[in-house]
Image (tube, rainbow over all chains, first blue to last red; front, side, top):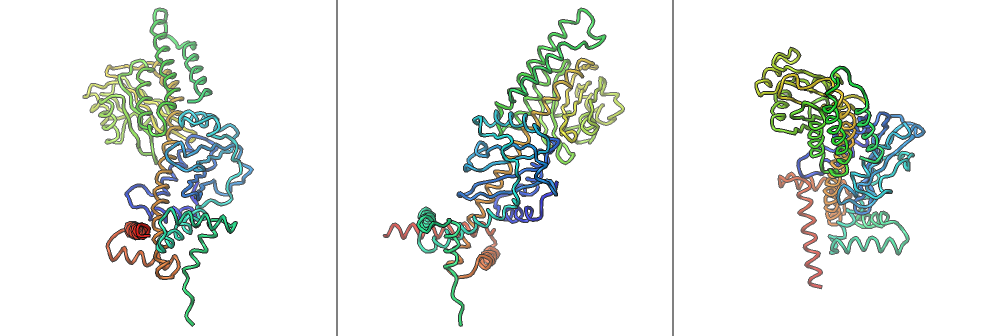
Length: 192
Length: 276
């Protein structure tokens, strides 16, 4: 099961942002997929989502040419139980044999010390259409660029975030749309 | 492990107790067999609780416990080690005793030995006289000099092949017999399940941590881009090019230059607020 070029490219870009030494993201994610494949014979792929500053960023590595109808079972476990992560951060595994994740789900529930509903079996049977991280990364980038612009204009960070949310609320638009407006406001008019 | 697994482990232990095991179990050996079964049941019960206690941080701790339980469960064992393979090479390696670490270090240093054979061939490997062992002509004599003469290696099987092996060592010659093999193979099945599930969790945690760090670092870079865009009016690509130029001029990483820029902007904003 190979990672798509888009996922690999986005992970490479993110690895470039890392300051401290450590493994590159793409091989690390590849090893997770290999471990899952060893644990479950009919394994078809996985999806990981991290929610950063309220923006979900997701990556998926799925069997090539996967027909969604092949997915007969899934298990989701929350990353919140693995450390300080925002709600919504999760890993979903997919497989092609019903019941393939029953033991894994039971083990995860006990190991994570989570409540009965936290590890979910067979509730995520439709894989994401596209999860190469690009949607979430672009939104996160716009949000932080807008915060940077507001920092330069004298806002401190909490006030910058509050400003984005408040303008979004008043305009009944998304924070992402407001972030784009802030970015657009920096454009200098072309000289005639 | 979950209830389903725990019940399955107890069933395995019950089966071990009830199955006849051949000529070794003549009358008079019943008490020895009963003691073996008690050890196996106890080890399997402890294994079933291991996932609950170890948590996602403790892959190595979990493996060490599995090795310790194996020593208890397998008759003749003086020590045990576990090796997980990654890209067909030995990776995580734990041992229940110091001498096992030495023996496994010799094995992996030489690239030959019972664990390597067991994992490569996906079958149980046994030897009662390592000194004269022809299968591993360099490993056997070296290990015998350490006073280890018997080995029982059991592959830990995943769905597509061996994910590692469990090595059980005995100081005496012929430490392991048919009963040891049966107990070991019974134990290896739930041990492999524990190991591979723990491995998935441990790796998911590693990915999440690394991804989180990268996204946080990227956030600072984007805030720095915003600061540059506000000052110069360019777009994000132009701002990034500027940031790269600055990092090259200062001989610093882009992320470090970005952090300094953002920290400076925050300080000025705080100073402005203090004045107002």
